[in-house]
Length: 194
Image 1 (cartoon, rainbow, N blue to C red):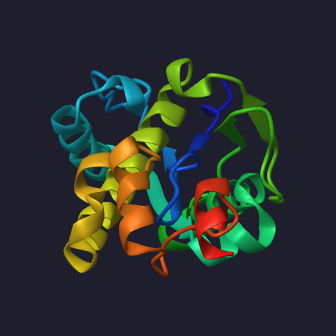
Image 2: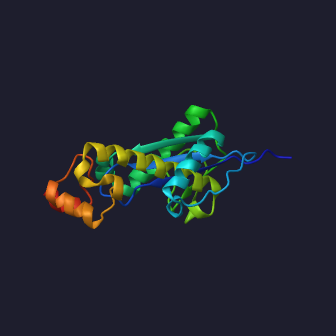
């Protein structure tokens, strides 16, 4: 009998916001320790995501979180930055845990440039448990960053909108200008920084 195939799920969080880093996570779940309640992170409450994040870190065979800065996003574009963050997460996971998956499955329609077999799955975060787990870790890590940015730039309301282009965020951008954590290549920010 062949050994079970080790699948690593990878996903990103934070492609749409105007500020902050884009985060990605890679997770190899333990088949002997199923985690109940995994789903696309966007469909879960923040409280549920935080609880699942702790459980994933405790019980997964391997996991890692990585990111790309707003400056990197501006330099290489958000798609490439998302893929680079996934690549960093996958490679960090391999290094930290010494586990190499047989297959990497990523959410979306493009694979990061990695030396492992990789498969892109559209809506993978709602179809594949390991991708769901990665989406949760990435989202929780990104939200934590935005809570920190909220302390540094309290007038922008990052804790509420997480950097997304809400009416309030756009209003604060107009009132207070662009911060070093804003993505200059995004149209609403670019218009103000010209």
